[in-house]
Length: 250
Image (cartoon, rainbow, N blue to C red; front, side, top):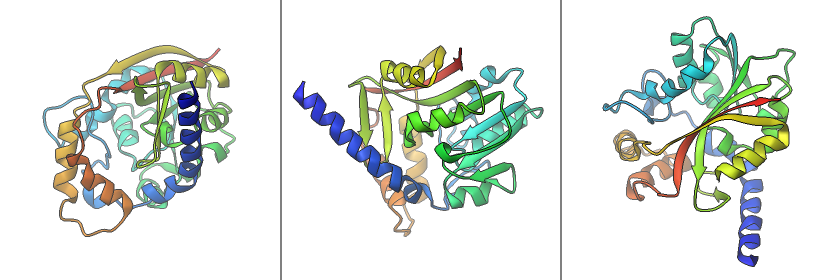
């Protein structure tokens, strides 16, 4: 029991540190390393490494009938552009705290340079989406603020099986168990309506892609250094999987 308490304190310490450093870690112009659609991740489907658009494919059914979307932690706009292509009737507003991402996205989509917990708008949205972004935020604070602008959220993130909660200081990101996701969301007033796991996250293909892109890079930025280490790391941690969570405020 004492070891678990100590682990939680360490995680909390790193989480506080991560809140300060996450902008620096991800505020890097990666456009030279991305595909033409400015996608950052290679995930669920597709046998070819350039099919990054499949990153958002499994989210589309949750967006049927949706007219307005708030994309929280939009990255370089790949998922938002994919949604726009398949659902042109949707009005998409993006949020990022990275200046380089903002410069890449703002010519293409409505985008605001701000942290999720500081975002302010007079608009409301049919749904807010977090695609592999909430893990880098102060989850409760971000969700509490975003709940002012929507009563529906769609999250694509990680599920962790090794413990209730784990924090990676290398990548400034949190991993939550299913119970932790439920507690975190219910504390804001959200009820999970659908929760799906995907163990087939194509880690090896993603490692190969990034290795090919950055192996000759001389950029000293910390993110490039971490990406170069990815192919040397274990291919898949059995304690992790991707999850899609759809939740509503009752």
